[in-house]
Length: 174
Image (cartoon, rainbow, N blue to C red; front, top):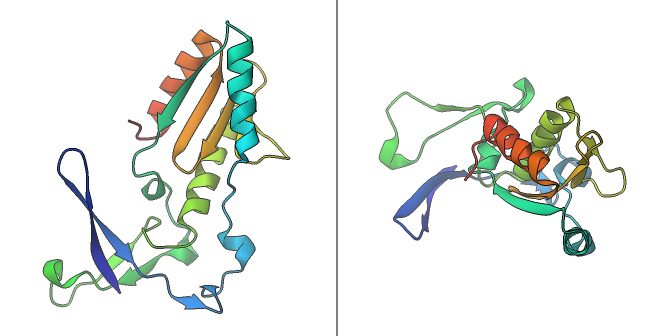
């Protein structure tokens, strides 16, 4: 089943479709806890980023918010499914084919995280083995920390400008 979820914003109202994720034994049907896990950065990592920026005047940081992040990756063929639309937009004899992660799906955050890391790795970033929310670009010495749809980048001015451009080219950002 699915329904509209309305969210009041500073300007206007945002409405989204949320599809119920059916559960089996505490998690998505057929999914293990590991399959639904999305990494969350430890607070100490942000403290380290802030300390580095404060201790070196040549470093700065930018914060980038990816809009509708969970809707950007495509689902794999075995994840695509159909759902009846909400009653107010339902057309007799028609169903919706869901091609992107949806609000309410337990794996949505993980799917976006995998998608972002894949794009960043194709562009020379390396994912930290200890803290999977952290990446670095060895050539530019840029470091990033991602939590959900927010990414903080730490580095020198020119690499930061390049990173903002890179994110804008690959994601819908605000």
